[in-house]
Length: 601
Image 1 (cartoon, rainbow, N blue to C red):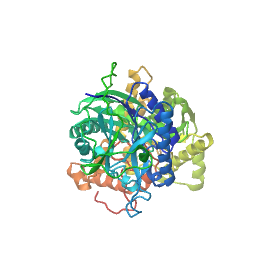
Image 2 (cartoon, rainbow, N blue to C red):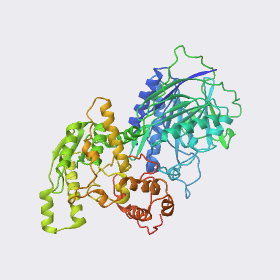
Image 3 (tube, rainbow, N blue to C red):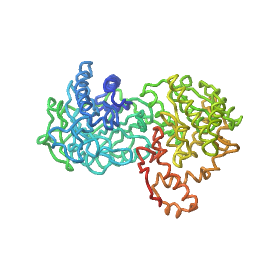
Image 4 (cartoon, helix red, strand yellow):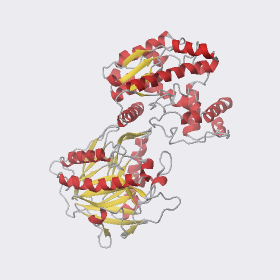
C-alpha cells in the first residue's frame, strides 16, 4: 500500500495580519519538510486568522487574502519548499456568481482552502456547510462551496474539507466515500468549550467510518477575542483507532506515517484543476457528482511511495483534567488578548477575595509576574484580613504591588453628596474603577475585570466600577467553579514544588464585596451552589421557569433568579469580552433583548 507522511501544523494565526501569518506558514512548512513530510496542512483561514467577522465584507481584505495566497505559493517554492503540497485556509470569493441579492453577502466572500504546490495554487475549494448557531454567524459572511476537492498525491486520493463540513451529516464526508478517497483531511477553526475534546474525538471516529477512510483533523490554537482554540489535532484510521493526537493549547506540528489504500478511481471525466486557473478562481464548473457535490481531482503524482526506512513515532498526547483544561483555556485567552492587542502588562484591582486572586494567578501564568501590576484599594469597610490576603497574593506570585486607599476620595464625595445605601456602596466600587483606569492611562497597562459568570448573570456588579476593564478572564466561569480552579491551581503548584499562588484564606472565607459592615454575598444572593445550579438550567440548558421548578427547585428562588438574570441584560452588554469556556457564554452565544417583558423563563 502507498505511504504518506502527513504533517498537521496547529498554529496561532493573528486576524488581519496576513504577512505575519504567511511567515508562520513558511516557518512551519520548513519544520515539517525537514522531517520528511510529504503533505502539510494548516488550520481553517490560517492565512487571515479566524473568525474575521465583518472583515469578510471588505473587498480590500478579500483581495489582500487572495493575493497573499498566490504570493505564498511562490515564496514556498523560492525557499525550496515547493515540492511539498501545503493545504492553507484563506478568505476567498465566489467567481461568476449571481448579482447581489437579499441574504447573500455582497462580493460573495467564501471561507476557502487551497493546495499550494510547485510555486502555484493548484486547487481551491470553499466550505460547504456554513454554521449559523452559537458563536457562528457564517451565513452573514460567506457563500457555500459546492465541490469536493480531491488531490491525488503519491498514488493516494486525499479528499479535503473545512471544519463544519464534518459536523453536519452528508456532504463532503459522504462524497469522500463515493469518490474513493484514501484520506479525508479536514482543516479547522474549532473553538474550545468545556469537554469538547471528547465530543471532537467521537465525531472524528464516526466520520472516518462513514467516509470509509482515515481522517486527519488539524485545528488552530491561541485565541481571538472571546474564542479560544485548543488545537487537539487528531488522526484516526478508517476503523476509528487514534494514530496521533496533538496536545491541547500548544502550538506545534504532528507528524504521522500513514499506510493508505491506492487510488483506484479513474480520473477520466473528473475535473482536473488547471493550476493557472486555480490561481484566480475559487471553483471551476464541471466534474463528477458525489452526494450533490462536484468532484474536482487534481493529480500531483501517481507513483506510490514505499514505507520510510525510519518511520516517525506519532505521539498521542494525554488529555488534561477538567480544571486543568479550563484553566489552560483562560490563560490562553488572556495571553492572546493582551499580546495580540499590543499590550505588555496588565493591571488588576486586588481585593483579597477569590475572584481577583484567581484573575491574578491567570495573568501571572499568561504574561509573567513582572508584567502584572496589582493595586489594593481599601476603604473603611475593607477588613484587615482582606488587605493582608492581597499583599500575601502579591508575595506568593511575585507580581508588582501597591496600596492606594480610597477613603480620602470617598470622604470628599460623601461630603458633597451625602449618599446612603446602595449608592454609597457603589460609589466605592466606582472610585476603584476610576483609579484603575487612571493608572492604566498613565502607565500603559491593560485592566483586567474580575467579574465571574454568576455575578454577571444576576447583575451583582457595579457599572463603571468592578466592571471596568478591557478583558474579563473569568467572565464565563461560575462562582462554584472559581473555587475549584483556585484549589486546582494551588495543588498543581504544590505538585511541582512551587509556592501555591492563592492564599488559603482567600479561598475559604465567605465571599464578600466588603462595601458595608459585615456584608457577605449571601445577603443579596442565594448560596452559590444553589444559584449556579439554577443558572446552569436557565442559561446553558435554556430551560424555562416551569421546567426548572419541576426539576425540584424552590419556585421562589427560581422566580427571583430568573428576574435578576433578565433585568441584568443591559449590564452584560457593557461588560468587557472574556474567554468562552462553557457551552453558552454571554455575548456571542446568548443574545437576548435588553427591553424585554417576557418573564416566564
